[in-house]
Length: 165
Image 1: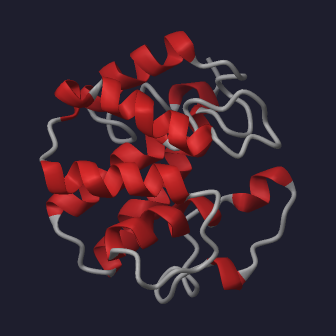
Image 2: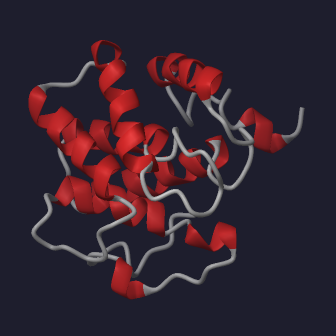
């Protein structure tokens, strides 16, 4: 087994609860599991988000939202390129699994918003800091599809000065 495929099996990458959620997501995932918007990307978004979130002093409940965003935001894509509604579908999938997510109403609202807006919002500082962190974590991994990072899409320090990927 090569290193990239071990990524989802490493308990330090995704803990056991997330591993179980990933198995359910995998059963309905329509793209290449190891492709541009698959599990390796989700692991990088998680790493980016937790790094940014800790630097921004997010609470543990906020960091849980960031971790869940990493696995749901692209989970319902139907293609690798133009799929503007995939975030909303990812939020609906998260909603269908909400009983397994162990989150409160505040966390659910933030997760739903982050998944829904992640492809449509450029840089909206009125969004909750947890949502901004989710969006920044995803956008810091944009180079995987050959697109250079444009700092106008990043909300603010520390995500613009530290690379977590």
